[in-house]
Amino acid sequence: MRVSTSELLVIFVVALLVLGPEKMPKYAKKAGKLLSSVKVYADKLTEDINESIVEPLEEVQKPLKEAVEPLTTITKDIKKSVDDIGKPKKKESIPAESEDSEEKQEKAVETVEIHETEETQESIDWQETKTEIKQES
Image (cartoon, rainbow, N blue to C red):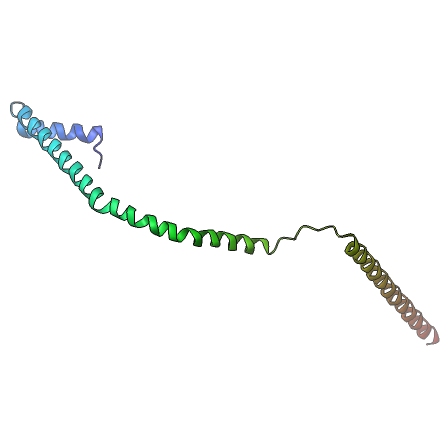
């Protein structure tokens, strides 16, 4: 917790009014000694906590981190593999297969063209039939 300058000024003015100008230096000196002793005890407590709790925990964590490292590596590899599933693979150039696939594509296009031509011809025939029926009526 930090004390701002304005808060410190208010504390000083209140202390001056309550204690008076004669006793203020004596109590300020006592407050300074108290704060320095509190700081020493807090530093000592922090050091004790580090020695008794933090450092042993760090020693225990080292083998655990080493044991978990292969799992994190495997997790990264699996994630990369899963991410690559939706991506297209690079085309490998194999001349024999590429010729076969080109021929298959050409045949497929020809088949589609034949079907489209047949459907168009059927549509024309149907239109002619409808026209003939109307003319007979």
